[in-house]
Image 1 (cartoon, rainbow, N blue to C red):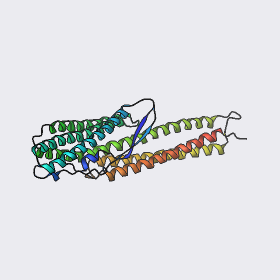
Image 2: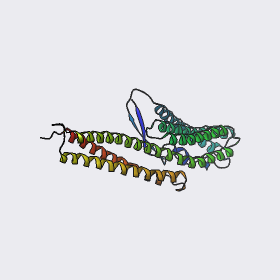
Image 3: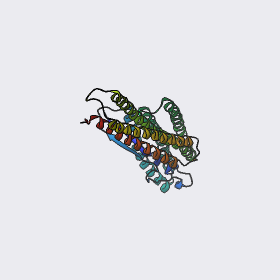
Image 4: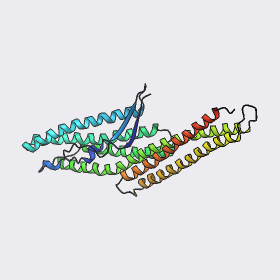
Amino acid sequence: MRKVAILSSVLILFLVFTSGHRTIGITSAQDINESTSEPDLVSEVIVEKSDTISEYDEKLQKYSQTIEDYRREHDVYRVARAQYIRSKTQKAKTDAKESTINLLKLRDDVAITYLEVLKAKLNETEGVSDARFEGLAFKIDEEIFWYEKHKNIIASAGSLEDLVADSDEAKTRQKLTERLYYEVLSNVSYGKVSNYRERVKEDLDALREKVDEIRVDERVGLSFSNRKMQILDRWIFEAENLLIRTLDKQEQADDVINDMVQNKYQLNKVKPYNEIMEALSEGKQFLKEASSYLIEVIKEIKIAEY
């Protein structure tokens, strides 16, 4: 299967909202910021080959295509802007307005398609509870509705000044939407750790049950010495402690997620997100260690006593 996984960090669409694009003013064409610098957030994607295309894959492809469409339209916009600055004719003004409308509509499409990517990723991530998914999916749908409505309003703009106002409205909204991006990405990572912990716990429970069976088995050649049982118990005990420590890290991450949702960090989304990722990364490391201890249990069981 082909699986595409978004890692930590951020997204390309901030090129659109943070580069400060404005529409061309009647008296000053300098109102438009033509910056094409790298965005504040860049999505990092790992692609693993597979035979099928998931909904997430399809949404990601659509998002990538929308980014390319936006970049091409931005080039068209820059030409129209330059011509308007040079000639100041009515035709150049009309062309500039049309190009600006197309650019701003595509900017909304970038936000919409990225929100769809996040929803698909959230839906396919094992470990995300139904309650978390439903709550976040509702928020995502609300944002998509806002950008769809805003995109339709752009087409009805009567002047370049109206487009300036429409552009600023979207940039203001994007600051709020950005917090949702981080909230979703945090919950995706949280869900992955939860799923990992559950799988390790299942292995631990199965091995604990097996060790308990061995403990009471007194058949010759099948029973273990007290020393060997102590070794097995020690590995299991260590694994149990690591699962508890993982849960502590998850709770720590969840507290920060809740604080971020309640906007206790104001407009700073990067700091809490990094704190969440650090806590979950530590929890994941505990799970790797716990898994290694369970492997030791299996090895010990397989070693015959003479």
